[in-house]
Length: 209
Ligand code: URA
Ligand code: SF4
Image (cartoon, rainbow, N blue to C red; front, side, top):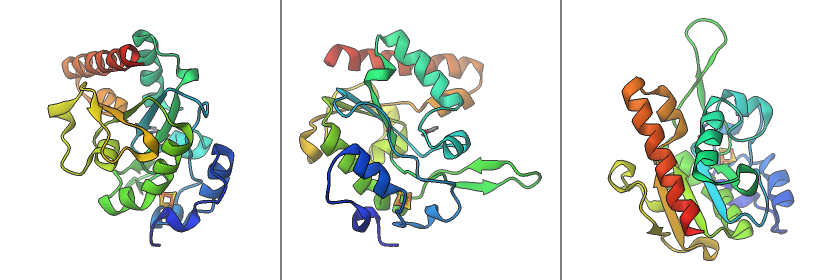
């Protein structure tokens, strides 16, 4: 359990990475999750969206952003003029993290820890290297912490086109915005504002590519 690095394949393409990620034991999250949820989308995508961690639905389906947050994200992308089919979508952490509900068998999503974010980062860097997008979009604090640093504050810097630290895989531009799940969880007034922020920030991306 010393991070994902050890599990990266020699062949650098999405199919090889996705296959290798199924066997990753780089942190403790592989134990209780159903499967690793790798990124999805074209290998030549010009935009990469990075979420936090798969949710309950994604854990079962094996695909990122197929649950309620994904629905909201689809709507915001469409409104911003970005074709979801042309975008590569992934997460900062590839295995679902949850705690069992006190009653019943619901699984409650939990934020990944700092050490889990660090452990899983080699997969994200490998995706950046293979896809080589023009812009990487961090959806929420976890993705921003992974790629922009643990001191990065989304609330202070959202919607800005930023230089991606270290230019991993030669990728130089990044933008951080609110997480679709945070928008969904917010009460009415805040939800409208969060959604408007997400859509506005995605329009910045649409203009930049
Ligand atoms: N939230 C995320 O961060 N990623 C998903 O894939 C689904 C919900
Ligand atoms: Fe490996 Fe990431 Fe899964 Fe941890 S969360 S086991 S580092 S793929």
